[in-house]
Image 1 (cartoon, rainbow, N blue to C red):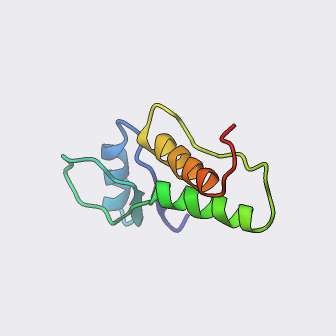
Image 2 (cartoon, one colour):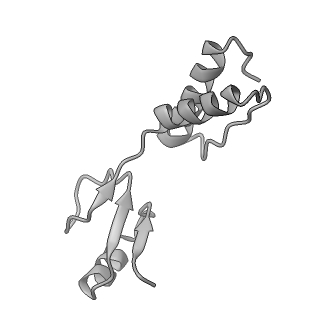
Length: 97
């Protein structure tokens, strides 16, 4: 393994921190942990814009039955992806099914 790119699961900060201390490169995705013992490099996602852009792209290819992949709807990531999907469909004058 060359390194880890991950969304930090609850309760795993200590374990991931130990791996990083041993030299394993770690990058977190959408790191929103406010209190942590160490800083890791992180990248953020643009879920509304990403879902909007992906949906617009598929519509531009002539697709009219596009299904969203949202993730868990009890988390902002799922809600944001669905929002971007709906925005693109509404802009194209298509119903949200």
